[in-house]
Image 1 (tube, rainbow over the protein chains, first blue to last red):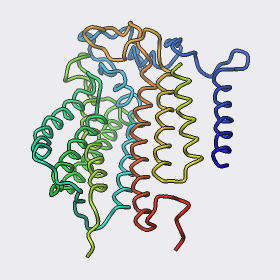
Image 2 (image 1 turned 120 degrees about the vertical axis):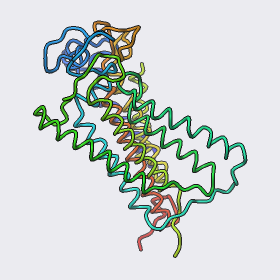
Image 3 (image 1 turned 180 degrees about the vertical axis):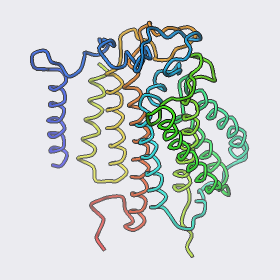
Length: 252
Length: 111
């Protein structure tokens, strides 16, 4: 009975979604058809030409210099420059959820023992891979303005490397205090950079550093700095969540 | 086509949220719903024959045809918030399992 009611409700919701999207009244469609988007009509065209605040015609990789935002990766330029305030809120949401997980699973804790003792290959292979994963994570968040990736996936990779150590060694326990200090410092510097931008440029989180030549590693002004901070913050937050889930409360 | 598939995925997630009474299954349904929504949002920005929105030494000019970077940035935000929600929900589920000894919402009793 419950299933039948659910199916009927889902079909009704599906009908409304499809009719709103694909049978528009007389031409004013809510969305363009799939793949037939004209970017010049959208706000994204000024993100691509980097002329949101000033005049600019074309961005050339390796040649254009001193643009309003020097990031070669457009998604990064939207996340960390044009919509940086949004990202500050997003990082806050992640912090609050990590805080909530720590609060719910709190108490004096020790590492949860797994049913099987990890064997030799897992134990030493994990230590070998751990360094490579951390280096790759750091590479990812320090090259967020040039290549795919950025602070969020880079931080997640670092946390995954820590998870590997937890899985491979029954006695391993990370020093969570260091992660909490890292997270707090990274978040504070992000806000302080935003306030500093008000003093220097007049807008919160404005890109006040020189942006350099598009496509070089020292370019894009504030973007790499903020993405490194986000990488450290996300990495330590997810590591905290992993630690909370893989430990059990100790009876006193 | 992929837009229809993503909406179908969303509906599967809604069905799971409506019909299941197990906490872990509810969290999995929430994730399926979210993935369908994310694929839909990315598909809004797709441009036919568009390049990935990154300048490289091969595609070195902004005059080329790129896909819309804005929906991708929005989805990156949504994914991170989804991770936060899932972690919080799993922590709640584990806490409830500790006090009630079950993941089924119907079998829980008030104290």
